[in-house]
Length: 274
Image (cartoon, rainbow, N blue to C red; front, side):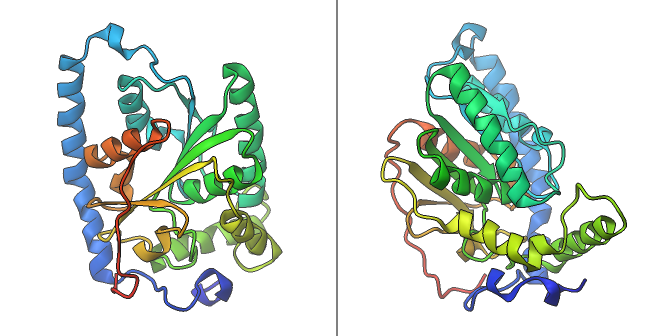
């Protein structure tokens, strides 16, 4: 499979793949990880253990991005718990399978958490995880109080760097070879791809909060595709990968998760190149 195999409707006109220069910016992830380590160490020293007890009643479900698992959002989980949130894993070891199937599994997980806590749930999704979160919020507003997406290209899922396309290519080839739990060609070029896109673009209920975190320094996806018209857009300066643990992003996510968060909309120029 080549990049052309990805359905054209996944990359609408006006969006494009990040350049090589953009991908080089992902090297910032090293310094972002360092900042997280320093921030986490300081937080542990400043915060008494007793203050870690949940202060917010609505649970938070964390959904990892493409090819990542629950462990990728462990730093975010720890940070949010220190802020008084009760976090839950999505039970995803590696987000490399059919997105429609993943959505169904996440819905079951959502129902389980909602039943256990007796309330609606807030979802935080990184990259592909954010697209899955949006689809769930549209389909089950009875279970979802709000979502926060981080670097999630909902407007153009196909506007990603060629290195990501090669990973998709490998998964498709392995699927053809008999590993059926991996992403199939239909997931990127057929009816499954269309269904996934439709789910991620479906209308949201007015009582579902939606914050879209994006970065113009994103070297993996076109940042313009991450700004949903109905979302409160929050700009950060992190890399795509670093959104999972950069302290500034953690602060933005924490603020957005608070019920009826009053976060100002960031105006952006959609015509600016990535």
